[in-house]
Length: 396
Image (cartoon, rainbow, N blue to C red):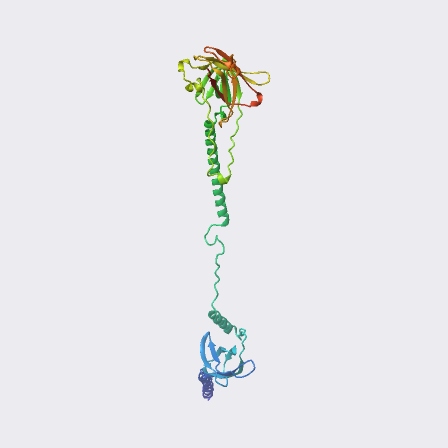
């Protein structure tokens, strides 16, 4: 009897369990979710898109009708995300926990960005957050190089250093070329004007002038370096030694308007010594009976107490006729540019009275000798050399 009662109780318990399980299985897939989409003022919205998400996947989707209502059927228990959107009215979002048939009522749309819904359970919130992260891709920030260094080009400091180096290099080359040009100018000046190197002017008793540099001297001789080599000069033949002062030639200024057509004046030519009168060719007499005046010996040079220079010498008429107005023209060369100055002295000879009544003491009979002297005042200035010309006239 007891055993029978125990079996009956077990059968009742088993039936209850089977009924509960059956009802649960019967209820699975039979749940529904419904509601209505309205705008911010509570008016129903038609043609709104309603989406139901489960686990990040779309579980169901439909469009509201004219009454704004929606309804999802054959749903299982669980947590869902309900999203509604309309092109003009905005959007809305809500989290739904479904365990039975449910009507959420009105779901208002808003044009504002909906705030993320708060999940009732952490699991659903994580799924929603994961879903949003999947939908919104991350923006990748790329830094664009803004400097020359980042773009692979040389920096500003590097370019400045290179330019400074090139400038210094060009400056050094310019200085070197300038030095070479100065050396060439010095050499050219030496040949144009030897006094740039050989500044000693040695005047000899025979009227010769030697320009050079004195290398050695004693009481008997001088050793002089010249352009043609070394010379040994007897000190007894030296009249004086002058230190010449070098002066730079100044170029004549020519206006730009006439510079192309301007022609500089020709350089004056030094007169060469001559010993025959220019008028001899006009004389009818033969050369045998013409006058011919020549220098006897050398022209001596001395200085008086006032600093004046005195040139003196003798002239002899070796021709066959009388020479009248016998004179010696001294042509002094002032500088290497060709500037000259002429001084004249007459010979002291015999007196002669001409048909015109003029009396002269500068006549030389054939074979006669006459002296001359020339005073060069101190204010005449320095000169680098001189030449002389003997001139005379012939009268019947």
